[in-house]
Image 1 (cartoon, helix red, strand yellow):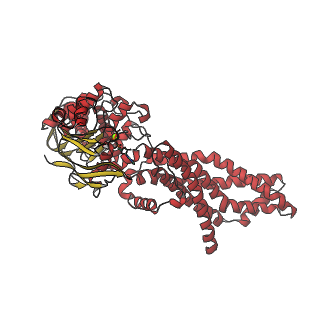
Image 2: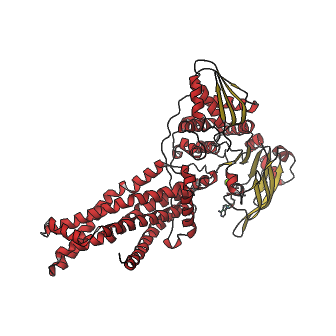
Image 3: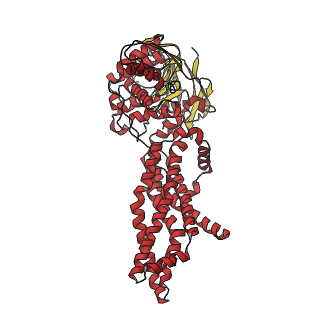
Length: 359
Length: 244
Ligand SMILES: Nc1ncnc2c1ncn2[C@@H]1O[C@H](COP(=O)(O)OP(=O)(O)OP(=O)(O)O)[C@@H](O)[C@H]1O
Ligand SMILES: [Mg+2]
């Protein structure tokens, strides 16, 4: 791509090549500081070598004027360029530029797991492969915002549910097992089922309900408002800009949520067993004897995969939303349903796989 | 001056319903070309075909020699689009709406992006609204912001869907002037969908008129000529504000 070039000599800045948004990126800061250094003296900006001079180029010239602070002579512009600069000078806001506030996206969609079309999956794989070239499509602020909403804000719910589930499980199983004098084994039962199954499964259900639906609603609204079409016509693919950060954020926060759920569940269980009169040392000995890091890790891996599925399904539901407000509602519904169904199906698949591999 | 956009025998059907067929015209470089016609005749549909969001059921469209269906990436690099709804990114303020394409497609440093984006907003008279969200501005402001966004990369071809619908006559005249200025200063080519008669007479070099009853083009030419000498009743009625 041809870019603009700059030559600086005392009192003169000569710009040539395309003075357009795509052409002036690299030299903007150098040019402005050259103009600032020339402040006090006379400055001539020579644009006779410019092949293009558009509104972005004119903005640069005005920025040079502002940087210099005094009168700047802009020479060599053709009649159109002169008119453009005059026009822009007329409308130029007096206030200095404010820093942009941060932004994200919004939408909604529907999807049933059976319909995760290969197409969408393929598009995501392609988006991922093309990511190095398209990393500019990603906005760090988006990622942080999504991770915060999906993760941090879900923590209280995860802790509460984990604690209650741990308590209920312990209580429900302790009563019948007490008949056989086996109530201490409740610790093994609850720990294993939390680590391997309930932890990742419950968090995935929470994620589908809170985050999958939010993704679908956000992207679906964008779809309905033609924002997705606007992105596409700009040449920015929505998969990269909107879906990848959401999937990434969901997968990133999932292990933390699963660990939190596991711990909260164990605490609930311990609370019940201590009420039944068991000492903490006996309970923790049971847990460590019956379940190891492998069980724990298994749950984490499962969780990350569930998170990817839930996020993918939510985003697809949003991007394929139809027209009108109802489409947004439908997208959210199918995101939740699709997310939960996919999670359970994947969980079944894992059960078979793990049994086969004898993990 | 060469042909920038060529539309050849283009038709669109939704299911069994034909919206239009056999639409043929071309747009010359630096021209302001207006697409007009009654509500529902397919103006936005034609525009969506031109920007590759809808594949025509028949015919072929090229922009700067690139087939819009087969070569859409090349086409997207040279067009700027304003949607009828504005389609501003609802979660970003106006400034961010414009810096987004700048940050993706240029090397401009952040401060320069803000500077450039503010200039574009100033061009459409929105310098003071830069930090507002789309939900916090009026309908007319949203239209103007959407034009500023379409201008973000100063594309040589701009397609605007009803830029002045719903605006007061003064703002509307200001927008017309902006379009004329941009054409004159940037040499950009415009396709503008509008049915504001004063706008059409003020800006259009040529126009094409679609009609849903005729399912296609009923007039093509310079607006003043159509007004004064068209023999088609609908066209005469449109330009002379008569009832049929
Ligand atoms: N996706 C679609 N599916 C089915 N029909 C459609 C679709 N999009 C548009 N139409 C139909 O095509 C016709 C033309 O729509 P279009 O939006 O192009 O009209 P228009 O000329 O832009 O009208 P207006 O001036 O009101 O904006 C309408 O009758 C509409 O119902
Ligand atoms: Mg329309």
